[in-house]
Length: 499
Image (cartoon, rainbow, N blue to C red; front, side, top):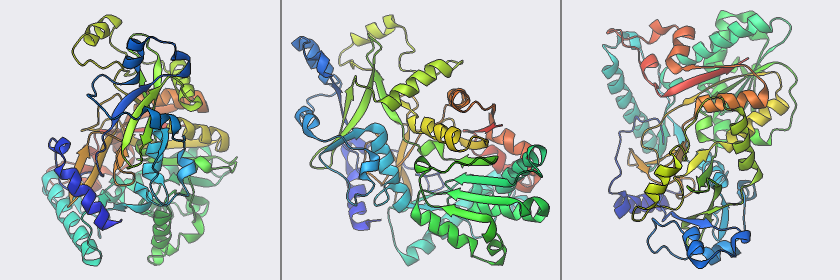
């Protein structure tokens, strides 16, 4: 990470008047710069140019923004770019505009300055926790905090970094038991449905340190050698640094080196996948959906017309949010698929009656658009990839169905960074690209219906603890008091499986 620059950015962030409300959290939080102005505009389409002056003024600008800089002329002249167009850029762009999903994608995944390729460090304890010797769950929390400190002290001894983006996953906290539970589920279903006619082919999307891969392969090798002989484990990893780390993990010791012939690490984005896989396979996407880019949609509270968010980056690198009636094909398709596929009610900015919205519009400084709704358009495209290239896949995914400290909006993300070993949440996703984690909750009821409509698969959604209670040996992670951190942590997570 460009540390001198980052330190200046975070010092400005923490001293900025708008950040006085930010709360700081200990470094044991799951994961994680400058808070830009974030003005919001309504960009009228050309066919509205004949509107009267009063209506035009109201449409151009959110009424909650008092005297914002006039960026309309910049919006007209700046080119529209996409995250794909920015992948070869080594510097963060200026004097451009892009859809919200492209801004988020570029912030998280740009190879040269993105959060995941350049900033992320995943905590991994040197030895697994011995839960059976702990008195209770608070003791686990204390031991975890101590190990976090030791882990980061060792990193600082090598390269000091005040803004290290360090976070953890259930795979690392509960290894090897968490990976063994996943393996047990896959092997059981594989032997019921595909063995011995087909190989056990496993794809993992975003494998982090490679810990889940190794824990699963160790379990299959030790407990079912015949299945292990038929096992092929393929990692699809967008981050070159993490792909290199996963390769290193495979050669770490004699035990892991034995898996080399069973593993293939594919360093590419799933969204550039172009290889047809006709064989039955299992697809793992654990804590992946939360970092898929979303589009931002606001609605006219009177006409209920959707407007799509665009982010303008000016010549100083500040960000301004515009909304236009011209919905791009991807966002438009998501709205249509959701309306057609979802049989259950879902949260929406227009859930209030028109009468209530009319009353609220008469309040001083009332906004002329609803709060934003963040729609998972990238997730829909991921389902397209599964349908088109992995027609016989079975999906196992786990992610957060709720997140605290989210920005304002429906299905809104948590946007946070880490500075001086403290987690710092902010109030907008439009922040300096690459320095902040942007993670969204997953509405599993809605996503389940959309996944079924796109792929034609059958699905089941359950809580994280229910899945582990069935497939893990929960006695391995029980403390002396009977408390079980593997079951009680991540209560805000759900699991979806398909067949």
